[in-house]
Image (cartoon, rainbow, N blue to C red; front, side):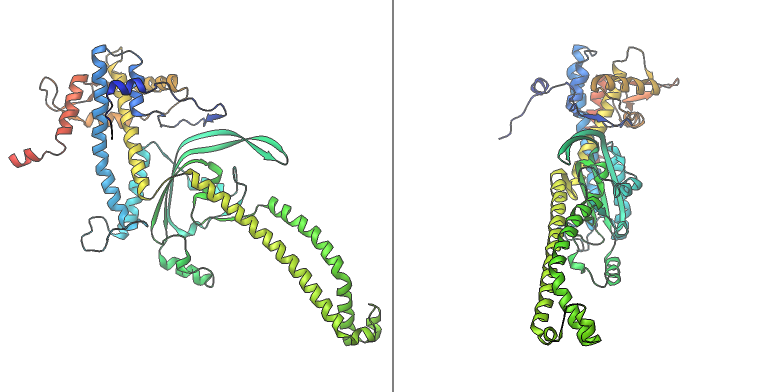
Amino acid sequence: MKTAVSDTQTKEAVSTSPKKEAPNTHYSPDPESFIPIRRRDLVELCLKDERLKDSDREAFRHFGKILTAWFHQDLHETEETLKATYAPKNPDTDMWLDAGIRTGPSDAEASEEMVKLFRVLAERGNYREIPFAAIEEALDLSSLIDVRTTVDFDDYEHIVGFYRGDVYETLTRKRFFRKVETEIDILQRVALLLQFKDEAYFEEKKQRKKGKKKKEELPFKPGKIYLYLYKNVPKHDIELLFPNVQVGMTLKDRLLFGVPAVGASIGVVAKALPKLLILVGVILFFTMGPQAAEKMGVNRETASNFMPVLAAILAVVVTLGGFAFKQFDKFKNKKIQFQKNVADTLFFRNLATNDSVIHRLIDQAEEAESKEILLVYYHLLVSPTKGLTKEELDQTIEQWMSDKFGRIIDFDIDGPIAILQNLRGTGAHGEKDLPLLHIDDSGHLHVASLEDSCRILDELWDNVFDYSNRIAG
């Protein structure tokens, strides 16, 4: 049974102190736009400043609540568009897509439209795009998993990656019987869109490789788009997130594997050498005569007795064959262990796949934009001066966040200002088409009062489904 929780209870239960990072973690010097606190907690953090009048505190909480509800509805339309666009390219769909009633784009249009929408959504959630050069560079570098990797990027029609949260963590690792500290560059969130090329490409690739891999053995569906969301991915291991990654041994592992093998093979050859000499001597006896064979210690009697020769051949084949099989088996076991390590790493870092990635990114975009608008509105509302310029407001918010969170955040000022300007309605005293924010002739920004703002948002929410007015009209 679910129990409703009042705003007062929420306020008392929630901690408004910013989360402290582990002492062995520090952020990239390149500031990001992500605000590391929940929307509800941000409202309480603003109220903790005690710069609002007591009579306005509950009104500000209500403003934050109805603002989030408005954005939830607004982004629901975006989510429906994304789902319709993704449907023909979704490898997990269980819906009929060829029933003659499709409402989304065609297959040819879906890919380009999906890539565009994915980019927009990730950016609204304060993600940054990962340059393709950084993915290629990761193939030559390693951090947590010391393996040699290869990825055939030609298999993909589209590769789009975004990250949020670039931090450095100091980890303790074992190196040759001693512990050493290593600094690892970690991406706290990674969102990937990967589209494989069509079946014709993989059929042609199979023919090129002489049928090395049949179409039905591919671990993915050609032509489909795969979406992934991961957490805490080492920047230099990002290529491990690709479904077609091939994992092998590094040079160090090959040396550690090969040197003992060479040492063991010396003993095998030493034991087999006498039998090999007999075999060579018998061959010389029949090809070059008894005199050549005598130099190898083989006489007519030895040559005429063919059983020792067969025994020598069999012994050599069995000994060397057994040794080769043993080394090959060790190699296979080592490779399996590598693949298990990779699988374990990805399993515990995976947050969402395909459809569920859309839901997660929508939720994050809703939170991100709500928080940005709240900060713009709050700082204009409590500003001791009458209005601020865009530059002054940007500096004020970034300094406030630096004081609260202990790190520099690159605040996105243009987006929330534009949204607040476009949210319009009727004020508390009947003013028509009143915006939540307006810019005067001198370039100073002003926001409507809390009473006006709550009424405007309430009116916008009431008119989301304005069915009765349409019927009356």
